[in-house]
Length: 331
Image (cartoon, rainbow, N blue to C red; front, side, top):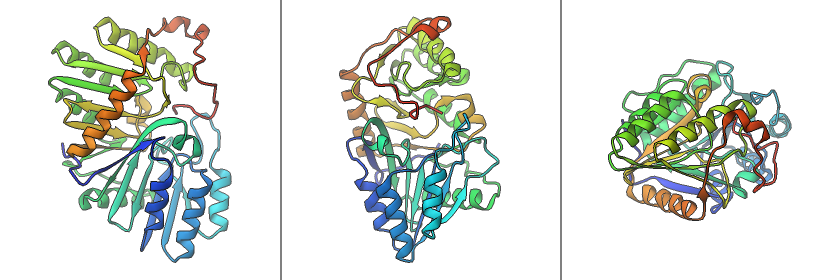
């Protein structure tokens, strides 16, 4: 398993806000390739249009609809296309393209858990990785162009990147299996038996496992059954489970032994591994892992113990610490 090294920069949301993304787009000298699940932030739309007008090769690929059928990207797509930006809907090979990535000038790649929408820069806990590792930048670019041209893409076997629907479940499993002392997990959904078994096995070999979840927030009626059941199984094994309190949890983060981290768009979810286009990365750069660990620790300290309710009673379970947001769903 490869990893991103010391040149990796971490973006923390909502702390860093949208400015780092505006700077990346504004600093492009030749090209900007963006692949997003949802894209509606006005400043980012204008930055993409400005880059196009400055004769950069700007290409944007957007997911056409959520699994529910909702088409959140129609208006942004039309606005960007009307301004002359090269636009395309994501590869129809995948039920959903949930990837959140950007490539600048073939020299920088951003791999994120956040969408390009205002709430993900103001309300949610999210992360991004910016890498200048040329081999991995080239791989993100290669996949972008393959999806753009509707071609098959195969990731490198030694890559630091996790791609769905190809190597993501296997790589995440290997990451968990490698933990020897501690495993910190900050994820909203737990809907994959293979990953659950890996976490259970880590706990049984005396790895200290901590789970920071989002509770019921943003979980569909379908997924809440497995999520609540998984959290209860982990609690039965003395895994400490807390619910994120300071921000809505949208991040997808694992940290093993304080030395390596896994950040990506994929939820712990069967469809995220098997049916969708997703992208994540393993990082071992010391500064990056240290910052991710510090944010996890701060979030953990202000969060509270969480007893997941009986899944069969989930229809009656109410959590009102955050206002309901029908658009903030863990697809």
